[in-house]
Image: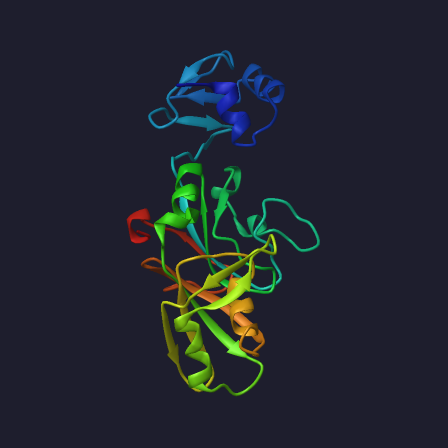
Length: 231
């Protein structure tokens, strides 16, 4: 159960005092009855709440897969580049999403947004070993023999400048791209792995996390997904 003013404030209809003002102006109804006070307790999953005649969309949790474009940061705040949160439109834009599995600003591909912090922990915890597939374009023609060193493992450094052994679980090739599968996601890991064998990554796209992929999504689009498809 939640207080009505808290519920609407969390969904960005205004501060609690602003919500209370709307209630006094008889702009809010609960199950068809005009609300009298913001202190009223409601069950958001069962009650029908309307503001100015418009139904309030609410569900929990909300899990979204997003096809992140280049030029966006995996952050909840705009900094040097716009946040991926800016891509989220009605009715989802009223919710506070957490980002699981971040991507660099110049990397595109699959990103997971959720309102459930526990899911973020499950996805990002090292012990879960969730496979992630990346499409990689290199700065020069590659030799499969050299690239295959990544299957044995290469020593690179993480975000704290500490060395560790990074290993590819699988590698696939075509004339233009390499597809690498890893089950970690440390600081610039894929880029650093290729750099360790003298190749520079000039284009990087994450195309899969667990069983989730970018099917039916164009750049910048998103959709809800079944979290069972991750694990």
